[in-house]
Length: 202
Image (tube, rainbow, N blue to C red):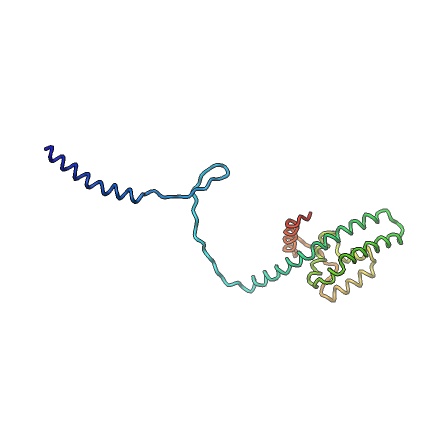
């Protein structure tokens, strides 16, 4: 009887040993990467393979991105000029506050006009017609006044009328308003981008 039990133990051992050996070679434990959150929690993390989605761009979106890129470039070029114009206009207005003499007022305006021409004349004349239109919009944004009224205020109604006629010839208007909630939404977004990038104050 003891001999039979001995053989049974040997057979069980021989049958179990290969299974244990196989299990040791191939662990059923899955390795999962973990991510620790700022709060200290540990959560599982895995990486998904990259998936490329390709589609043909429609004519609508091709035109949209072309127009948007053109507008963005124009804002980056002209916004510094609009900021400078706003600063100068504020300074001139401050100088004219208590000046009643008309000749003295004209001297102040002419003096600042010379400074502006010396600093910006070459740069402004090199702008395209489109960039000029964007600049007028931005000046309106920064000063709260359209270019027609600004010229009329500082140079008189005749000068404003002449420059309005010139603008009309090029398909534009000095009286155009800035509408950040309407037609100029995209322009306003780009201005915010420029302000954030270069540290301009709104």
